[in-house]
Length: 286
Ligand SMILES: [Zn+2]
Image (spheres, rainbow, N blue to C red):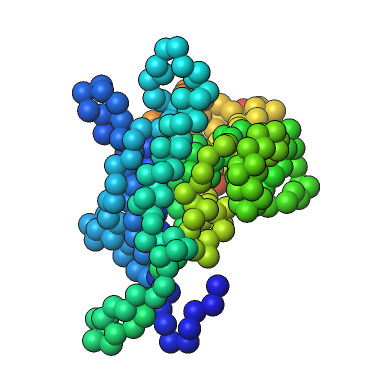
């Protein structure tokens, strides 16, 4: 997009996180939606005490977890629940929609009145939330049209195309939608001005990096050490790590840890190279 010279872009950031859920006496869950802007420095924005993220809505619980009403097709109930979700989002996002978007005059801290243009620039969510938000099956890629059995291949596939999907939805072409893994839903993100929905996706550090890539790395490391008969030495070094501020290392051998939290994985990331080096330098059998 291009802005008139001298005007200001405000990149809007949204975040929804089902893990922040509040349970109301077992009655169900709410799904908070937060908003911030990219003009705030990330070091400031990411500090909870600075309140740079504001809560804008508590959305209904995820469509997957709704209680199904008997005698009514489950698939239809799920689809309608997703549509309700998107209708709500469309309502919330309407000031950012194509129809509403022109510059807005705001007086800045330096007393100069400037024209501001608000555009959605990022949406932080995990994969399952993103799949609801983008109206794509959770088993498919949200960015490209890769078939399910080709995920992880190096081959490139066409990127997701909202205009194409909208026309299939208008024609009720369920088969084409299904082939590309797209749900039959009037997607709220498609109404946003100058926004390509799949470009809003940001990497999910907890699930992709810490619990995905690092877990994969740890499986590789423990497999390698086992092959070279150094797993006991690894456990030894691992469980004798001294305490250090900011690092939480469980005082159990790595193999005995069943489920690790993101925080524990982050600590492992800080020490793993050192531990691995020490283990490889040790003489075998000692
Ligand atoms: Zn892809």
